[in-house]
Image 1 (tube, rainbow, N blue to C red):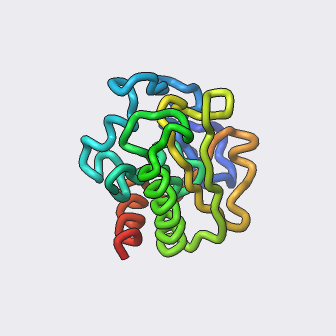
Image 2: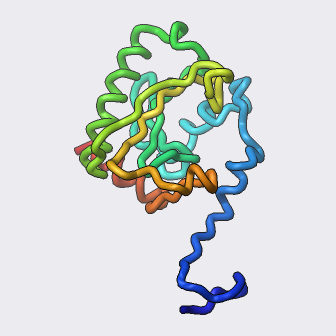
Length: 176
């Protein structure tokens, strides 16, 4: 047994404290992105790759890590243009979005040994889009046994790597 630092009676359990996740769980300061001035997907490209968590930049789309990932390496492919509907994309945007999705899968497989992927879009708020006003495609790496009780019981994901470290690994694998 070890000292729990004021967290109750000592026992054999380790405590995992992730207070920064509470803002996400409660939806505090959640951007809606209804117009380009308030949309994080429009602001991110003006940032450095490190500050914006950008993995790669293309001509009409970019790949960026999700700030609130489902799994380590969860990234999104986002058109630079502020558009909400898949049917509104130009042929060039559709082509590069598809090519970047393929590159994302390859980079994630190389960098993390992902065994599978969830790839998709939530179009519209009722479909589950966090920022419905700016289309984005999710690429979520998966591994056997990567789901445990934490998301079910505590509505919290435990991520073993800092986003900046994940961004660096994926950017290196993307170029590789």
